[in-house]
Length: 343
Image 1 (cartoon, one colour):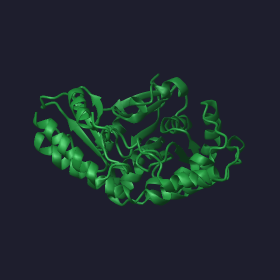
Image 2 (cartoon, rainbow, N blue to C red; image 1 turned 135 degrees about the horizontal axis):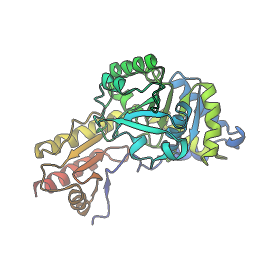
Image 3 (spheres, rainbow, N blue to C red; image 1 turned 60 degrees about the vertical axis):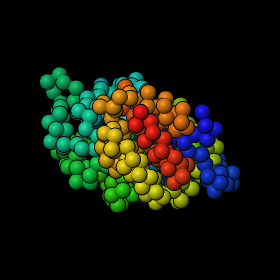
């Protein structure tokens, strides 16, 4: 196996840049459980302002941020609506039920191509001994939907559906920065559509850890108690918050470079009939249904050549570009993929 691997498994594999490491090393810190870490406080205020909300709360992971947000808007034994491939019900190990007592019901997996009328028809009101719906959750961009971007018009319609049914609308915005760069929608425009949001600093932006819950001041005050209950209270965590602040200042607009690299990869694999959908952002989804290689075989063959890819299912794989993959690495990845797919 080559010494130098190209890692396209995820945009979470990045390492802090020298500038980010310097910001972490010099960060002013305090005890955040007591609310005394000035760097955390600054990060929370900055992110809240970016989305036009009153407050935000720093959490150690995107899953925790999502689950805190869901507990803010869905009481125990009530219902959340989301899509069947949503991160909150696919990759968070049943946390909504285990921690929040939340019942989940899903619409068919369609990635970013959501039909608001389908969602509206699923809403269950109080009464009739049914589990009442309390919130709708969407994912922007959509991970298993190939990094798809939910159009602003669709989100506005979902906001209308939520308002008419008196529901909350939550956004799993782990990669919302990509949507912002791809479609040019201001972050504050996204923010005004949602009651709660989670946004991630370690997917694409290059921070080593961290996500934030965004919402009203009242919700975030309650979120602090939920975070503590879930074991998320942190002490001198300004060293990590400093990485997030550096990422927001230096790594958002550069996401367009990752989108361009993903488009190059998509163009290279398209002739082999394995491109599931066009690459809208930094994710290239591979559908190997008609390929002689299944996902595990493709991943093994690529690894032998020095390329790591992510296996999502027996016939589903994924390539993800990020700041640690330069143009030369993309060239090598294209060469490896085309050789392996020709076999």
